[in-house]
Length: 342
Image 1: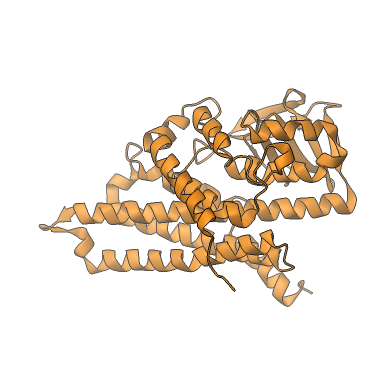
Image 2: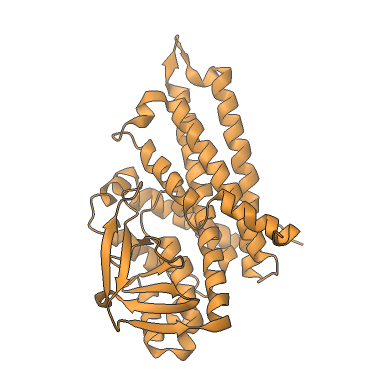
């Protein structure tokens, strides 16, 4: 059995990494905080042209027909670049969720090619009352309501901006205008679709967290090589070495767990939900630890908004809680292994 990514998957990852390095540097991420929708429209369109945005959609909808294992490395690169677009929510969760109901809904089917082409986005909220990422700019918002899934056009949705720790992640509370919703799935079909969507969201966030942590660690290593105290680089201090070694160890333990979860989802294994929860709690814990050590090693400069470090730190803090925090997913793993609490 081959326990490695294919040459094609690695080449696609490398291509996306090169793209983000050129088109999504820290200055661009910072600029997204000032954009009305917290996005980089030209970069999003370029990603769509590369096939990334429609990667999980079928050929008939303008996508690439890939699976979660093909895409997990791309999401890791999006995290490494702190890419401000709602890539997980729209392309990794919303688009495949809509594709599941497309055969019985002409309106949804007509939207899918626009999603793949980068002409529209979709927002998703599967927790009642929770703020919805990107609802202000999304062409369609999918909501869970009493166990069913409803789709709401933007002009039938009242949105109210909410504060966010990450200025590029625009959150909104939403309220459906009377008569503006369309039920797209009910009963067992809706429950199964919601479960898969939640797993994809948690897996996507975990993959981005691995990329974020990897970049934070690299930035910190570069900094401690240059920053001097008492005439020597602070990276030579034993305490700094221990911090960075602990951070690297946590990250390298989390990464294969995330890849395993992507494999389980791509192969539709019975353990997929458990594996995703393992990935999310490992990735959340690892990224949070890396972020804490990165901030400690940088010292006072790490607290300044002028310094780029905070762009990655705040994304880690946001994604660690998104789609369920580590405690939530540990409880899911425990229930999967030990059964429900009596």
